[in-house]
Length: 389
Image (cartoon, rainbow, N blue to C red):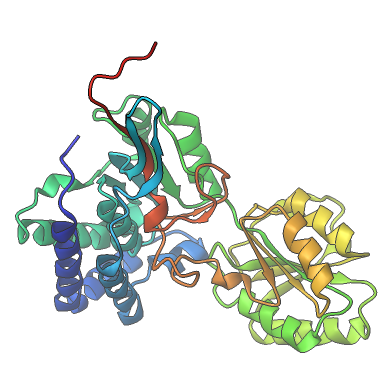
């Protein structure tokens, strides 16, 4: 295991990376155009995530700069105890060691997730998808320059140019120690990693997020939140399902308004009554689709969400605070919203400055995994010859 770089050096690498991203902005965007032109798939969400423009580069720079401004997540005291025998006991945060990030399509992950893992004192192994290879290799080149300009080894950040078979072999019999794996991508990628990995995996699972419009909802608020929930169809925090309380006053008018707004955005509206199977309720669309159904009560909405959602995000639209309280405490998703959009389930939006992934697991961290979450812990015990009797 590498000796962890000082916090000053880690921060300087991040600030150097931010500067290099700005200096190489045009080249990054031009190289990304090659990846876009070479992409032959028909997955519109993957194509959307693949794209790097000025806004994306701005976000990369902001992520690196913000990470450099945050406190060191390593060595934070979580617990202390003075033993009767005089030993002083501490529990402190510690790095994992080596983190493998496997991801599809998104070159920005090569900056943001790498930055979080690096600032957390870890060696980073990156396995990106073939669709973004040119963009990723350019960004890795900049990471290595940032490390070299700060007299740090390029071994801290390594890109694995593996095909699927080579990746499977590495997962099953890694040629170097791997302490944690974070897959970021679709359900097939996650299932592949879970099947073959021999070390802990943080699951960033499917979205399939729900909005429940309660009978006491402000329908203007509901319209805005649902429409905003489809503003980026490739995002894991996008809305796929809308449940409308059958007791909502003017429910038919509300549904017609909603359908009109969705039609303008070219979003296909699926009606629950048209499907004999319930498989559609489990599906994460990542597409210009939304499913609308009705429900009898808050209790029924909670039960439906807990059965079908991906455990990511859910929202209730209501003016009744007690209904919202019951909903938020009972729905089993990583993030729950009252009168706000699920699109806020994002490390930057929730005050973390960025995220490694959004975990739908309950261990060891749920929801956006920020800098302060990508740590394990270690016990430090100081004595002067104590033995246990």
